[in-house]
Image 1 (cartoon, rainbow, N blue to C red):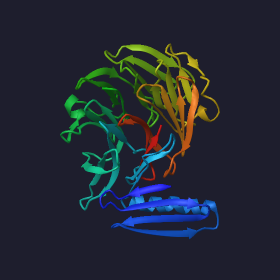
Image 2: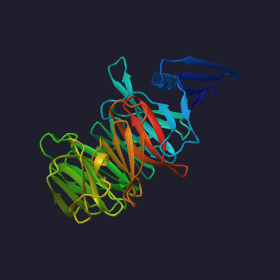
Image 3: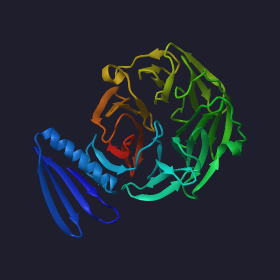
Image 4: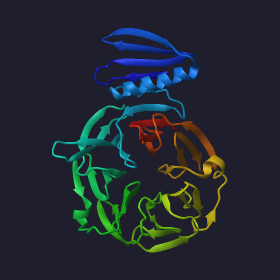
Length: 374
């Protein structure tokens, strides 16, 4: 059963399927009304259920399920569509900041937004971005670090102030149009236009430069270790560099036949996991840089469209279209598998801890933001 609520008016809508019948119960102005509609099959009734849920989410209702079990959605909020690969969001102090594609004004300018949500799904604020197209957003300390169409900005949720990091650091753009941000705890880093910087204790420091393969594009990624001491960067085919995140010293260079990577992350034990840009195959290297195949990395868990790691580096989520698989890296076993809702082809996903509970947060290309109980 789905429980929907309009947080502004207090109106409620409960939906459930009983065999081939869709049952809708609405509560408006203290009055309850129930309707039923029978369909030719259970599948048709289920499709109508999903359609009606989405229609009401678009009208401003929020799906809340406080009693969600592991693998079930506890929240759905309609945000609206995003550009291809621009589905950024980040959690900060129990709130969630989700990118929303805006629209063109009469002047021809395009306004995009960050939607500020609380844990109930209520929209607290709609924040105009200084530049459209939010490719990535990461939380670090009191700030968000944003990649807005290859320009890096800091955003302070307390003051509402955006800072253009390029201007602050006097970084000049060049023909190498690549960019990426990452974070781990209170440390964040970005790589853009051939330069790498780390943000720690409120200030940026340079970690050096990088060079990409021609036409690298989306096959470009960086990641910080769980303690923020190391940074991995993959900007060339068949190559990953591990840097000391304090001084930029190259600690290791991994050169193997894995092609181009578009995701990389450190696991708790110091090993490194990457996702191949072409095909989505997973590659893993131990702390010394030797390639390995772990016990869980087989069958349906051998590839993914998206990977994300929990803050403690002990849980891994593998996303393949509308399917999420969560691996317990301590036991090396598939912990659970569940379906993602309101998705067309792809999504952005992250582990978020809210009010002491862990969720998989998902922003889909269909325009939905959801929390799934872990």
